[in-house]
Length: 418
Image 1 (tube, helix red, strand yellow):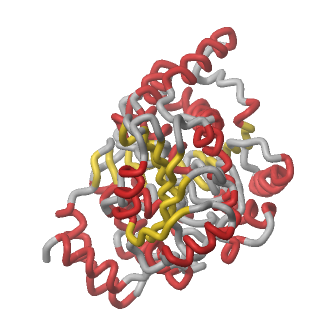
Image 2 (tube, one colour):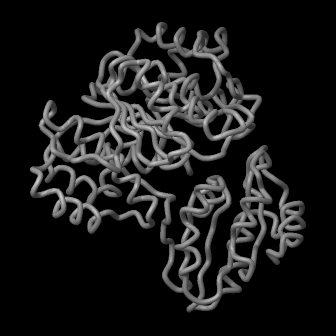
């Protein structure tokens, strides 16, 4: 079996939410538990940080991973979905899982997988934990896939949990209100395990407070954290200033993600000898250490080309100030999947831009002709370009050197240009 055959087996036999949507989702931990038992419960062989939230999970996970690496630990990082390669989901000290390891995992467990019929995500979580155990990592930083309470990653017994910002997304699974969605995310809170809340959202904070109280879990508000584990009281402002200065991710929302990540590391600092220098260097070297990409990633200078994976209302609102500050005339390459609030998301984008509508190469795509019709009806004037590549090329041809091109609407669109 070669690598392509291994992936064909996984994609062909195991439902994949990333590609096919809701019918791949399983609201149950039974398969995950059985699969991990089959593998010898590898999740028990390392310490972990567990992260849930609507937006900011990936950024926060990469920040924490990078700092732990600077502190001298061997760190596994599990995030989803991937941009270009499946192996991006599973990394150890920034190195992606090898194709050979993927093949070996499929070959060793093929018959069991065919019998159990887990989802693609259940299988991927198990593969990640198995790889981290084999690599003898000290820590694993693990991002929830969807929700929290019934997510496959919620079999962990972590050292600490982090919940990032909560917004409206995946309502068909998580609920129609912010408190309902927050309740699903709060499902990662464990008995007597510390939990950090990244953002001050008064309308839902009581959900986390109540769950933490029921679980007797120490709760930290990141926006009020003193960071006394990492620095002395009199050094906090200088420390905060240095972190802000070296953070390579742009936008106010990334500053809030930074507060949450540092609050987590502060809780671990004394016991695991993590210092302020580790934090500063970890944030400074974030991209080099982890290979993080797709969040306001600059692809070209003339014309200025940038892409971002924001794909829901809150995510788009976070990056909108940066979009509005882009130089020259704005050209937007835009595509999406068909299970989002497409009209609401597109209505957030600047009306004066020129749009190049496209469709990512996945079954969940919204057809570009339908998207173009919707967009033009909303006053976002543009043309149906078909594929992402054609839309991108047309935008580049239309833009002058002093103009800007923004690529977004879906992680799957970004994945085809990055």
